[in-house]
Each structure stands twice: as structure tokens, then as C-alpha cells.
Image 1 (cartoon, one colour):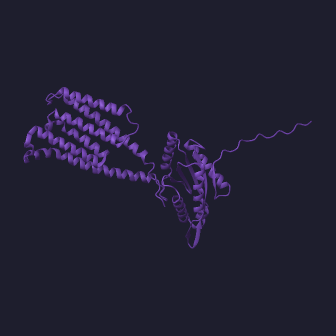
Image 2: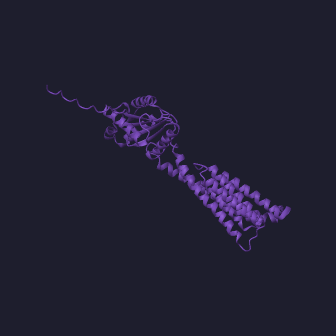
Image 3: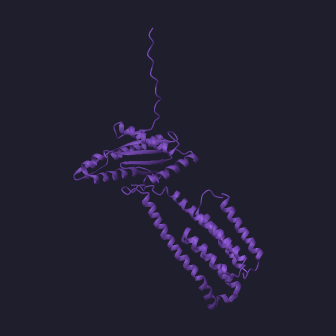
Amino acid sequence: MKKKNTAAYQPDIEQDELRGFSRSIAEIEWLLLILGLLYLFVPTAVITDRGYVIGTMVGFAAFVVSFRYINFYRSETRWKLALETWAMIAFISVLLWHTGKVESPLFNLYLLVIIACALTLGKLVTLMEVALISCWYLFMGYSAYGTEVFSLQTFSELMSTFGPFLLVAYLTTMLSADMHHAKRRIVSISETDELTGLPNMRAFKSLHEREMKRYGRYGHPFSLMMIDTDGLKEVNDRYGHEAGNRLIIMVANTIGERMRDADTLARYGGDEFVLLLPETSTGQVLDVAERIRTAVENCSFDERGARVSTTVSIGIATCPDDAINTHELMDKADAALYQSKNGGRNRTTAWRKPPPLQAPERPASAA
């Protein structure tokens, strides 16, 4: 069986996650500005160039507003979040340079960036940012102590201050990896049919809506195929529900072996399936449906010495020929399916607009 397109709906989930991360990073950005501003009013604050610090704050605030709130990007991406964390590191680094360098009480602001990066961007980006912070920290140490920074005592003192940052970065990254793994597992379970391993309707609806949006943007046609397993009740009554489950799995596997990698098969419920075929017209989907119908008709399995087989009835609807709305397209594919069922089963029907009702002829008036 070909690999099922179960990950096709993941971008919607990832986009929701990225939007949440983006809001958190925005709050951290404003928090950094507030903390820097408050430091300006500390009576004992060491500031070598107050005007430069204020100018840096204004520049960083302008970056946040322009980058985040002027609709620069329609969707969130991880590289955009990474760029914002690099900007935060640059902002903090400038503040440290003018507020005591390695002795600056603002040095701990780096922790906010490291934690945010570890939770949102993963190990590699976090490692790169920690390496950059380390280099800047040593450079400030060299500026403050000269070549003495390389002595064992001075270097040990500097590392004793910077060591907790490395520990926080490592622990937060490990925690984030475990959380993301658990979340992906939960999402997979909640959007996967337990019996067949196919996407369930919750996952399928998300993909269907996105395909409809893609049609609205690019005008590419796509088709829906509703597939109903004929005679499942008779198999359950005669051989038991375990045999019925085997029949459903057999049908799912047979369909999956005859679909493209770009197609998505989902379990609609009970003995019904729905197949989404991008870039497929009505004529093309009819050929695919007939191959699926014939393949299922020729499949069987052994149950207590008896051969168990089935057939499928199929209904088809295509966007834009039949509908340009997700609900209407599903309804028309379902209506076509019922035409196949009512017409004797084991057949394929494409939805067609019913002919208009004819007005009854009036009887000829008497002479």
C-alpha cells in the first residue's frame, strides 16, 4: 500500500503553533524594552553613553513595530521568528556594551532570548545563538580585562557566570523536544482512524478546505470520491465484527494501492471512505474510480474456510464543474453515491444536475 497522505493537513496545525510562538516573542521584545527603559532611571546605573542607549531602544522599538505590526508577512515562519531572536540578541548586546559590559546587571536578559529560542526554534538555532552570545561575552571580557581574560582565574570567573546560561539552554531544548514529540503524538492520535490508520474526518476537512482555497487562488480543479462498502452488514451478521473489520481494512488497502501520492484517503465513518484527488477533472476521476471499483471486486480474504469479498459503490463530484463550496461538493458526491447504491451497487456515478421539472401538459379544451 502506498504511503497515505496523512501529513497534508499538518501545515494548518503548525501555523497555529507558530502564531502562538510569535505572540510570546512579541511579549518578550516589549519586556526587553521596558526593562532597558527602567534601567535608565536607576540612580546607581552605570551608563557610558545614555544617548546611544536611548537611540538603540528607539531603533529596536521601530524594528518591532515595522516587522510585526505592519502586516509584513501574511503567515508566520520559523525563519521570521529566528530573525527576531537575532535582533533581540543584538539589542541586548548593545545595551551591555554601554552598561558595564561583563559587569552589567542586564546580562541576564540573554536568558529570555535563549529560553524563547529553545522552546520555539529547536537545538540547532539555539546552539548558534548561544555560540554568538559566548563570543560576544568573551569579546566584552577582553575589552574590560585585556589579555588577562585568558588567565585561568579570570576565565574561570567569567565561565562561572556564563555556565548557567549553557545549562538553561540545554535543559530547555531537551524539554522543548519532549513537548513537541508528545504534542505531535497527540495530534496524530486525534486525527487518525484507529482501525485503518487513515486520516479521520477532522483531518480530512482541514485538507479539503485548504484545497478549496487553493482552487480559489490558482483555479486548479480537484475531485471528491465517496466510496461505500457494499454488504458490510451481511458480513458482520454471518462472520462477526472481526471479519467486518478485516473487510474494511482490505478495502482501505486496495484503494490506497491505486491512489497517487498527492491524493488523500480518509475514513468517512463506518464502511464509507472519501478520497480527495487534486488536479483531477471529472473524466480523469471516473477512470480512477473504475480501477478502484474493479480492484475491490477482485479482492477477498479467507474467514474460517470461506472466501469473503465485497464490492463498492462510488459517487463523484468535481470542483469547479459541480460546486465551488466544500459543503456543497461533499453533498453532491454523497448524492452521486446514493445514486450508485440505489442503481444496484457496485457501480460509479458522477453527480449530474437533475433535469428541470416539466410542467404537466394541460388537457385539450373541449370544442
